[in-house]
Amino acid sequence: MAVETIARFAEPLILIAALLLGVVAGITLEKMRAAMARRVWRERNGRHQERSRPQAAINSPPLAPTAETLAPKKPDAADQLRIVMAADFSMQPILNRSEARVFKELDRMVLDRNPGWQVMAQVSLGEILRCKDPAAYGCINSKRIDLLLVDENCHPRHAVEYQGGGHHQGAAAARDAVKKEALRRAGIPYHEVVAGRTTPSELRRLVETLVDVPIAEIPDTAPAD
Image 1: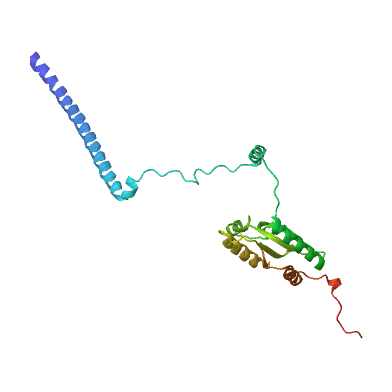
Image 2: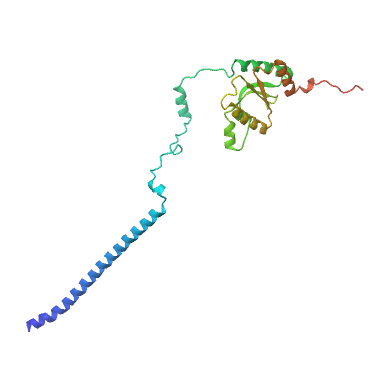
């Protein structure tokens, strides 16, 4: 009787245990199946990405830093002052001997022709030309004109370049072409004085052609009444 009673109570427990084991086994199998599916997906997706990348990109080493990425910080006023204080400066003439001789002759002739006009030496194009294009302005900003004739209102009227013996060495001709075109577009005539070829009389005739005579000094040629 006791054995039958124990057996009758044990049967439900065994059934419950079997059900629990089945649930645990099912959950374990589902996790294993999901993990295997994720691993297969990652392997397949990785191979697809590898095939889509160019071979050169796969084998190429990392790009070296460029000048842009390593561009030094532009020194501010305090940095510039510190750099200048640590350097030595000396004076130098703005014109050599032959250029200075032409400057003196040209200046004297211009003043004789019109005292309101002036001759300026080594004038930066960036000071007398304007341009809305930053790239174009950068091409001429640091270039200079040997001699510049300005009128009584300080307006630039004529540019004069002195061509010495070694002027056309290297890229000088190309630089002159850039200056000529920029001046032409601004409406400023460009003239050349060539060493050993332009005589004083020719220089005077050039001045007489370029420089306006003051209105008060123009003789009245109208016939008298």
